[in-house]
Structures are given as structure tokens and as C-alpha cells.
Length: 431
Image 1 (cartoon, rainbow, N blue to C red):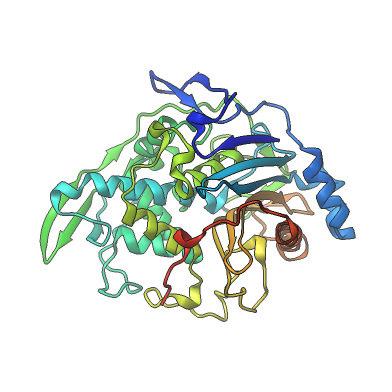
Image 2 (cartoon, rainbow, N blue to C red):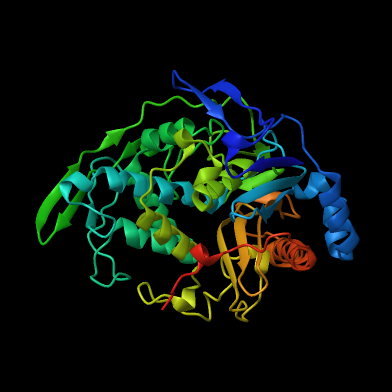
């Protein structure tokens, strides 16, 4: 278990560790306990889950080699000044056990895109300015229109809405192209996340293609406000740790390859880093100044609103709620087709691909004065073959997350707090 305070400069005994960022000649102070290479498990967390778990949940917990699960629960308590203090509990958390992060990597790109937009303010550009994507390299595609937006034009703001409302893949690809592979990774390493690695779009492209990103124009009323040239990433990644999953996979020709699928050069987003990055948005003062996101107060509110908004509450984009129901992208509070209670909001980013399900979330219940963070990943692929789209999401993955979320939520409802939290900064008008 790790404890730390909102104002970590005042937290007694808080250790700081110096480390070299890969590909950068600088040293940063990292405010959290440096994770060990081995798995970390806190007995309190495991006991809580086992004492409340169904036979199905206990089956998963008893078979970690098959399900490769990792879980982090962060308890939050407020002092008299409403400053949050944290206790983090882990179950099987390890940086050395790879999981495919899938769409969870969209979260840091949304954060970094708004940072980048702020730097372009001098040109009269903001998140709502029309963003026109051109092409300059093989297999790149153009985007000049977006029927999901109110004005029919694409923008950083609209891409971010779609990322958090329904986890839109094209929106991620366009932000990847806007930021560039090198820009993404250098900024994340600079923020203190040297193990994060984002190497690819969500379209079929090889490594060389993913290093090339498109020219982009920001336009208002037919006038080009800012023109960004195509970019090429020369950044070096550490691919020394193999990541082999499964016992077979279908290649692009749908031929079965009788060997593990190689994820060594894929995106990498350790679970702890995901939760800490979300924490830095929720509670900026809980990280040192050099690790805070460079976001305006308005951009931060924009992110928080769309992280917690349900698809039925969105007008632009407009979604079919039969398909995109409240918990479509809320794995840790699955409600089927039913609405999530009005008092509950979940600020999160999930991901699902190759049999892996992952969710990184912050919960609030305004009526019961409850807040906590909960993140997890699980591998659900009974036949061990990847790319065949025969995964056990419905039978194993979603029920696992739903039960974990319910156990922690119920525990939080009964847990005594010395100071009820003032959660007003997380209330939004979603109309």
C-alpha cells in the first residue's frame, strides 16, 4: 500500500527517485514510489475481493496465469480544507507483464492535444478551430469534413468528444497525426512516464508508415490560421523486452500462424501510469509542477465533462442509444441497457482489443459523498488464438469488471469518512 498527500511537497517521508528518460538527456523527480519489476499485491485488497466475490470472480482470481489480471484501487480521503489524500492498493500489478492497452492510449493523446492547442493560441487557433488533415506519404488519408459536428467540420474538440463518448478509433488516429509520434512520446517521457510507448495509429500501417505523420491546416472562414508540415519521427524506443501473447494468431490474410503474437513493438501503457496520468488531470496539485499538464482551466473542464458524459446526453455527435448505452464505455459500472444512477459519474477511459479489457476510472457519487479511483486489466481469450475475434468479453471480461466495481463501490458506501468530500468541481451541466 502506498500513501501520499495532495500537496506532496508537504508529505513527510515522501521519497523521490531520479531516473534517466529514454531518448532524453534529462533527469526528472518522480513523486510516486518507484514500482518494482516484480508483481505487487496488497493483502487488504485481495482479502476484500475474495470475501465478497462470486464463484466466477474467485475462479478468475485463482487463475492469474490464464487471465493476466492487474487491479489498482485508490482510496481518497479529504482533510478539513477538502484536500485529497490517497491510499493505493494493488493486485498483481507489474510493469513486466504486458497487456495490450488498446484504446486507453487515447486518453494521453487527448490531454496532449489540448496542451498543443494552447501553444498555437498565438495564431488564433483553439480546440474548436477547423482542423483539415492532408496527406503526404503512402497510405495517409485526408479529412476535410465531419458530419458528426455541428458545423460539419473536424476539430480537436470534436475528436476528443468522440474519443471519450464512444472510443472512436479514427479520432485517435487524427490526434496521433496532429501530435506526431516523436512529439507524443517525448512529452510523456518529459512528464515522468518513461515506460509509456505509443508507436502506432489504429489503422493497418507498418513501423515506417507510423513514423510519418500528415500535414495539417487549421482554418477559419476559408483562411489558413496555422499550417503544420508533415513530420517524421526519429525517436528511438526500447524494444528489448519481448511481449509474446497466445499460442496462435490470424495474420492479415486470415491465415493461422501457430506461434504467439508479438506485441514487442506495439503500444505500451502500464496500468499504474494510466491511473497516475488520470490523477494528474483530476488533482493537478498532487503532482510536482514539472509533471502537471499544461492545460487551461477551461480545457481541463472540457476534458472532465466529456470523460464523464453519457452518449445519450450528446447532441453533436448524436448516438443511437440502443447501441451506445450509458455503460458502453464504463466497464467498471456495467448496467446493461439500464441507465447509470443520476448521482453517479465515472471519469474514465477503457480499451478493448486482442482479448484484453482495460479500464482506468475515477468514480464520484454526489448523493452519498463517495469518490475513489479504480483501474484494471484482464485477458479473456480461452482458445489462445488472437485476431480471430473469438474473445470472452461477454462471459468473463465484462462480468469481472462489473463485479470488481460493485464490490469497491459498496465498500466505499459503507466506509466512514472524517470529512465528507466537496465534489462540486466534478459536477457538469450535460444538457
